[in-house]
Length: 259
Image (cartoon, rainbow, N blue to C red):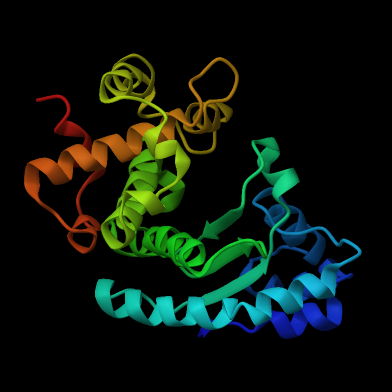
C-alpha cells in the first residue's frame, strides 16, 4: 500500500482528529476511533492548534510524503522489506510520552507504520526517522518471535538495530542524541548491573518501560543506549549488515558482551 496521502485527510479534517482516526480503525482490531487517537497521541500524534492547516501545507511544501515514499522504495528493495501502509501526521512534541521535547517520532508494527513529524525536520531528519522505524517493521516481520512475547532484551536490541541502520546509511552525525549519552565503560556497567539482570522482563510491565527509557532513578534512555551498544559490539565482532541482522537471535547479539 505504501505511503497514504494523509495530507489530504488533514487539510479537510485537521481540527477533527477523531474523524481522521475513523479512517484508521480498520487497521486496529476492535478499537474505536477515540481509542486509536488516544493510543497514537501517546506516541506523538498532534493535537489541533490554531495554525494547523498552515502546518500541513508546510509539510506538503517540504515534500514530506514524497520523501518518505522514496525512502520506502529504497529500503524495501535494500532490505527485502514488506509493503505496508505508512501514515504521516504532524507531531505534538510537548506531550510525547511525558518525556523530553522531541522533534520527530514514529510507531512501528509488523503490518503498518506511523510517522509524526514537524515542519522543522529536514529531509535527512525524515529519512533517518523512516530508516529507524522501517527497520523495526523488518525485524518484527523477519525475526522468528511473536511481538507479544518480547522481553526487555528483545526490545533494546530492536532499538539498537534500528539506530545502527541509521548510522550505517547516514553516518553517526544523523543518529539520535542518546547514542552518545554514555561511554563504553558506563554502558558496560548499565548493562551488567541494570539491564542484564532484568533482561527477561515482559514488554507489558511498567518495569520494562522504566528500564527502556530510564525513568525515575534509572539512567536516561538506558535501554536504548545499551541496545545500540550491544548491536555495535556484535557488528564489530561478526561484520554483519543491517539486512543480515534481522534474523539473528537476540541472545546471540547480547552474548558477545559476555564472552
